[in-house]
Amino acid sequence: MDLLADYRRATMYFEAGDPAGAARLLEPIVEVEPDNAAVRQLLARSYFQSAQLGRAEEQLRALVDRNPSDHYAHHVLGRTLERAGRPGEALRHLRIAFAMYSDNDDYRVALRRVESKVRR
Image (cartoon, rainbow, N blue to C red; front, side, top):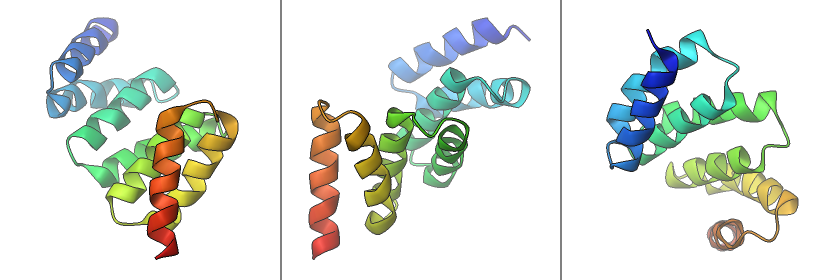
């Protein structure tokens, strides 16, 4: 197994609009390299893009547990929870991401959107 070649191929699949194909390539890499944040992040994004929200959440929680200052993992976890219909849980992670990186417009928009959902 050539992990680097598989990772590059998975990246190409993801960028070409085949997140499920990317996930299939990334899963065995994460098994072998569980501490590789870049691989785990791409796997989480692949799951998110292919609507495998439970699997995305699992990978994102692992990233946040290993590195609580990973603002992007918090953001995508928040988006995943929002998409799964859990805006109350999403709000915490979106707030953390925005607090760490308030210059990011995507973070601001997602936070405002979920805040409005929770206020209803």
